[in-house]
Image 1: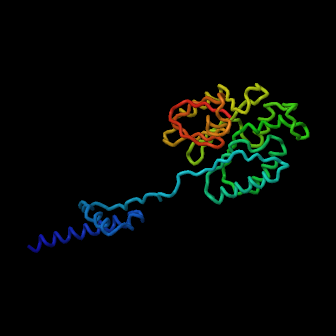
Image 2: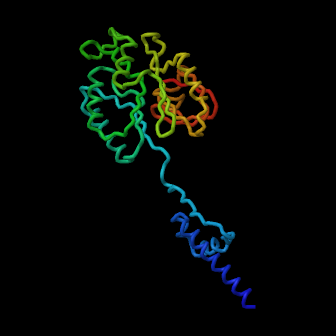
Image 3: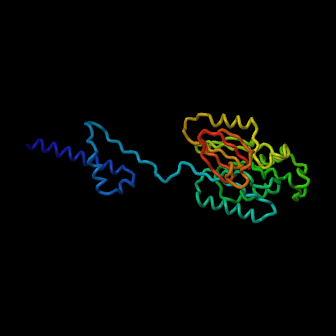
Length: 285
């Protein structure tokens, strides 16, 4: 009877050793479970086969660590002569940094300024002293076209709209400030795709455009191709446009705007965010 008893004791020792090893490699939140839970893990652990090398159980990443963080900020409306607008933007950027100093990017989603050269200069000066992530993306808003409402002295002159300002001049000024190659583009940040869209017209082309986003057939075709590209990651795509979705903010219920087919993407506009699943959407401002 002594040999079978020794065999049983040896097996129990092996089971106990394996259980300790497994528990030691469990995430800390599981290690802190009740003794009953630990006992159930020990009882369920099988004995290793002869000659088998035990490998540590890989630890899961902490459940409270996000895969990606970024901020979206719009409608800062910085004007060179309005010191309070400078202070508000500086405070907002500081708050965003304090909330998440490790954010991957900030998307400045339109209406940063009223489109005057001195407004862009004031905005740039604020950015130079602000705590910022490595990546900044800019979308054009309707207010980036507002130089057309001002005369050469920077005074508000709606009666003489467009005051010699063309849409192309407003766009060129925005692109120079944002260092972007186009009003619409794609960037890859931390393995995720960010698509920025932008209105290509303002009221000079057609007074009926109002403050809505007008995207050309070329831009919409580009967007459609981008959204249907397969990168194999399974990650969501983030799409940004300043003008809002219908009936989400004041003035957004007009029967004008952008028609876009957005499957499996997150779309951000100035004050809203929605998740789309293969459906057409029409937006206006």
